[in-house]
Length: 359
Image (cartoon, rainbow, N blue to C red; front, side, top):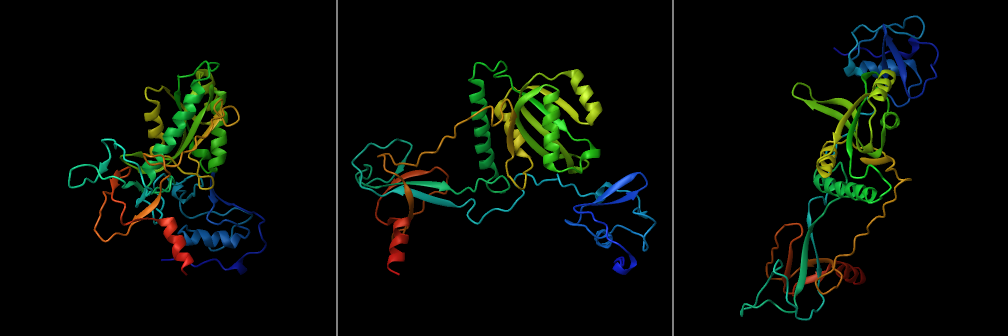
């Protein structure tokens, strides 16, 4: 049976609290984060009753309220419980195939064996045809359920490039010796935001001897009994020498749980594991960030700009479509290359301009 909402006339005064409001069990605080702005006591009470939390019908003395049910962690809302990669919504074009090609006239040339091409009645490769490449559309977003694997491959490649640049510097004495370090957040501070927890984890990791590297946030863990459950921790991959005495001292002071997983046998495999079930920050969307000796100020890695795709004759490729009368179905395979008759193929951009010009 639903409870009746609180009548604002039952209460006098306004509590000037913005962002959060505290009710108290005996020695067990619970935070009201159900509302973005919580200025009125009545608003907080009504919000809790809509969530099924039993509250008294009349206010108690002072600012404290005694709740009728026992404390349950399920009543807490954790702002650091971020969505995992692949748990979002795909865009309409994600996973669809498109074609690029070169429709210019070509001089006769021997084609590589890997290219599928049409042949004439004499069995020889067609001359002066069109080179067509088939590609799959990816949005490159970590939350997309269709493009997740492609995003992971791109992110892994970028991480490996950054480690390669660092290892090539002879002044880095620990080059080539990456360690896997994990910082887990204790329950008593899990109500904090992702950025607060991240700053704390990085700061404490440096104090115990981790010099710098990548940091990837995991908001959940999984086991056979609970399934997926909120358990924030940070995976760090980089360089340093972890001091055991410092680990004990910082654990006693902060409650953070440190784990040194040691040197990595496979750097690429570790990165892929960390990205496989990472959490995605909602504002920045950056799953992998860098700090310390591998931070953005200390290590500069030039971005390699991808060259525009070209055909075997060196001409640039453009979006194309087949509008010919004869049926032609190309395999839906990313990276498929073929050499076919030019008849029936058009440049999409040129076609759009002609349609627009003709009104």
